[in-house]
Length: 190
Image (tube, rainbow, N blue to C red; front, side):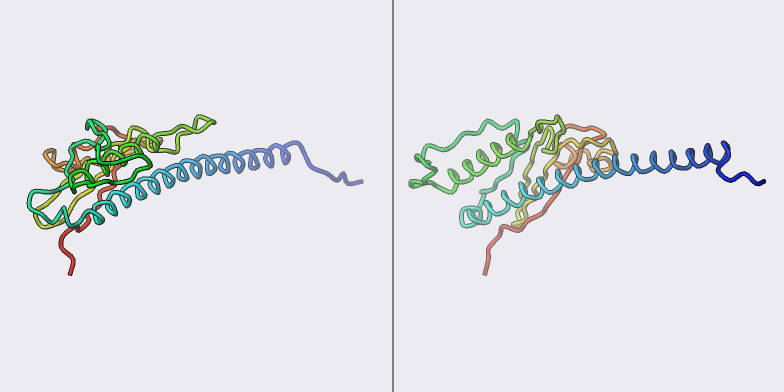
């Protein structure tokens, strides 16, 4: 009479293979969550850079005059306030191009402060320790640099850059510093 069924060794081997598969699946889930946070941070950074680029385009006539630019070494360290020509409800009343620039930088800084948020679960999907720097060139090209800290340690985003460059100085050096560097043309249009 033959006995049918599984032996103890077969069950142990099957359990081991199943356990390895489940551990692999758990590792993939963890990686997927980290990648999702990275994508959310990069999307938010792109949105903030696009906002400032559009603001500069709207103030293009002022920017075209000699000596006018949005250059700033550190947005978060800058002492900014809304200009007095901005009335209640955000209505502009005889504002100069310089006033508009100051208001643009002030409102952009407020967005940065709002972007550095922690969710109710404690997972930070905002831009942790964000800072921005803007560099203007005489060619009409403006470089906007946005730095923040990632939840994932990696190589410093500014590593390998010239130490005198604004990109290297923008934000605090760290193995979790991420940067988005965008060049935008704000010169004369035809």
